[in-house]
Image 1 (cartoon, rainbow, N blue to C red):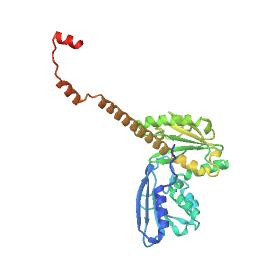
Image 2 (spheres, rainbow, N blue to C red):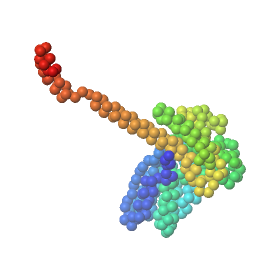
Image 3 (spheres, one colour):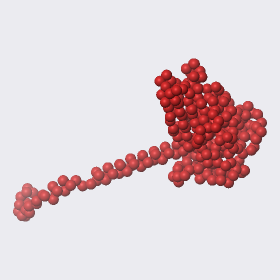
Image 4 (cartoon, one colour):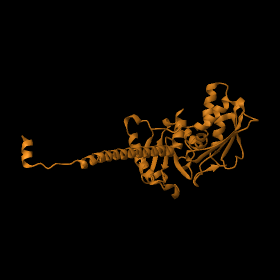
Length: 322
């Protein structure tokens, strides 16, 4: 299966090219959109080629989620911790965006390896911002400290006007995704994919993976969730995260995998749909070829119709038989 990259490939390409060609001082003004309606805008001027302004627009949060100044809780602290002096947060952000930062490329580390690692981290700004609340809770789980909101249902935004839910505890954290799809075919494929996803977790090679459950009705963890959040036409998926799943470097991967789980499922649903369409087209083409081979040859028919037959007498037919 394919995992979505934790960084914006396009943003990383822009940053890398800018660093490598900073002496040329080319003016830059780019807009682009990624999955789940995350929009970017990056600008740079000829006058200050080492300074870039990056703006990010996040998915519209549903009513049950908590945002502070247009950002998920803990996002400002996460940005400062991840980027240090290279990134300066502008307040207020530019119109139409949740976050605008000024990047100072002259403050990048001189070491090439460290420089590239920080550029990848900057290109992962989506994960840093949207995964901030989830990261805080999972860090506490890794240290096995008692969370102040233990047992409480915490909604986190991950798609436009949609949220997933987290129930933190001392020894585990349960993450529940209501799975919604607008297309009826996608809904059927997603429900089938998710059930197979749960079955795959039971194989011997995945014993250390988080426990995964699927149900067509809301699980008990969502008993306090608002009614509008419980409409899921493809069922509900639950993951039980243990401390061993978020220790050390595993934390970043777990945060990204959970934050983009719906996009991950949607990607594989679209790939399955495309594969089936390709198989159907090939089958139709083979049937058309079989029908073409079964058609009578027009030239042969004309030759058969043009043949003349001579009626033989009884004596002549007897002579031919001898």
